Image (cartoon, rainbow, N blue to C red; front, top):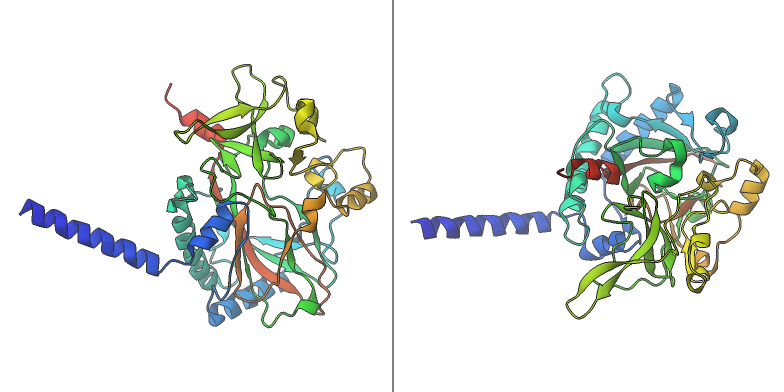
Length: 379
């Protein structure tokens, strides 16, 4: 009897797994792209009716004054010094924990959408090639959901959505979670290429797909800050026994396919204030092989307080190196879902040349930060 019961349970579990696979939004290729620093693009993710309801909700919220200009924050300057405008910059409705609030707009449409994104997040959390189990946790500050609004002429410069906490200065290590996976769902019916506003992403042109040691974005809680030899992730560990920090990569160790850390820096160091150039901590043989993901030249969050806004903008308009010439553009067509790793993928929004607004639902799935994980370890 016990054997029969076990067989029945096995059949049921296999059936559930098959149903989950059949209902999956993702293909194995989508998961691989997110895992390897690429971009997953899924068309027709939402029904036409929900797209219309969400777009009308965003339009009504905008007319009611619920959006605020929200450009890229220069950490070297205060919020009042940023000079964001609705005409030139992104505008955002930050629903946050109140995304499903019944006090504003079409909360039922937002709730229906939120439920779909929760299923999506839970699927990502248990996918073996993207092991991020804490994505499943719920909490007020754990996951972000917003509407984005671009007027004709607005754009958004090149940036990353998440950085290592140690590089954020006084703003680092404040929250128990970090942005892990970025997502966008576009709400613009019949959007054409000539209307501009494309999402331009900068994935790696060459990433090994067979290396078992390849872990992008974070390794044991340590966030990635750069690349070595174009394809090897470089991580920043700021919990060294010395009390300082070091840069390292992970490599295969022998024939047993095990991996180990290979410390790259000459000595442990204190992470300096912005702007940060990690290359100076590397031995000479690595310096011309290292590429930092975010620098003062490419991201306002790494800017210097001595730089004028004109200097920052001129610097951001430059290409970092040959890799920046490789890019993938995504048109903001209604129903298109885009997902990518929040730490490793630089991206921007090209200027909207249309006479109408560019509208999207956007957000981030969070996972536990390294600091939180460290605090949870048994004494």
